[in-house]
Length: 200
Image 1 (cartoon, helix red, strand yellow):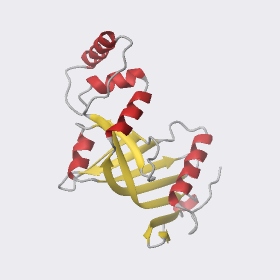
Image 2 (cartoon, one colour; image 1 turned 120 degrees about the vertical axis):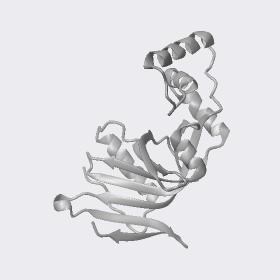
Image 3 (cartoon, one colour; image 1 turned 30 degrees about the vertical axis):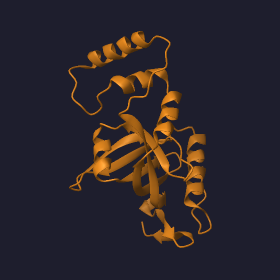
């Protein structure tokens, strides 16, 4: 399956959404999975997989996590991140770099309420990125909370919520044989976005 290549008149968010839809249509698992790279105040990087959860009205990319996690701590001290989407069924990837801010509580509340109940319970009991004695204890805590709440809604914990990445650059990569790949970078310009082609 081929995708449309970047053109100067195309908005990068629109093109990204086209590629994302093509990846989903290709049948690949979890096209919304993305690598989130952060760095601490000393510039030491770390990376992990998170899930894209749509866009806010300004076109920023959203994801959600525990605010006590390592990535959240790094973003609090150095609010810049890089995202990477790799869609092997299309042989394309997209890199996004930008500034990161927390989402308003109302947006985090709305998304938390839409999550599967087990995911909600897990978010409440998990001390993300902290040591635990064993996995069974965590499962027991989930079961205990489920019993305690009964049919009542699971409240969003105060230390869990969303972030938005405001793109400062978009790189669209199209793979070819012989590693002669095509790379296109959009960067902000006075009239919107400028497009530059890079060597592979």
